[in-house]
Image 1 (cartoon, rainbow, N blue to C red):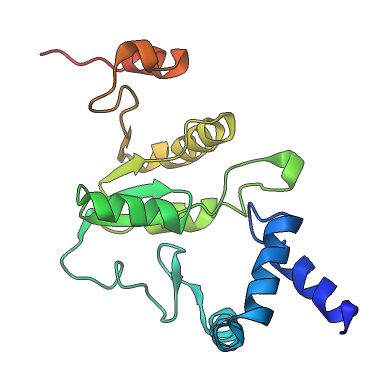
Image 2 (image 1 turned 180 degrees about the vertical axis):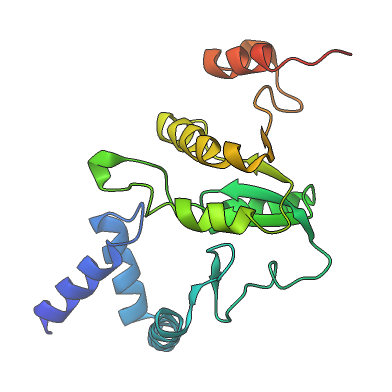
Length: 196
């Protein structure tokens, strides 16, 4: 048994978010003991994806083509641009069926400590993207300190373009009970109240 390869494989799985040593070991043991064909398939598809998947030229989402399927869809409303952080955010909005515009992905939030500045979040690409048909920019970034800082920075960069700039509502979820909602969410809900 070659301990060197097994340890390297365990360490390789640990690069995934939320995967610690024990989880990585379980995955490695499973592939080696019960599913070597699955491991071969995983290795092949992963190698191909790392080689062939890049960024969409408009929104920065992952794609195998020059434009992703959403940016290439003529049925999308190009006057609406929703700014999100990740492909997972795009997927969540698409699954909700609540948005038919286009997207722009920051692929992270401003964080000088982590070396994430305006270039890493695509600030210039966003300004260029908004120069075309875009009339309204909707921010759908996380309500974290970094997300708020990113939203503020980008909205200030876009303000001179004369666009409508908005953000998704924050507040109490449907079916939520006040007694179980955290204070920050209640504060956002109160500040974002609307007349009836």
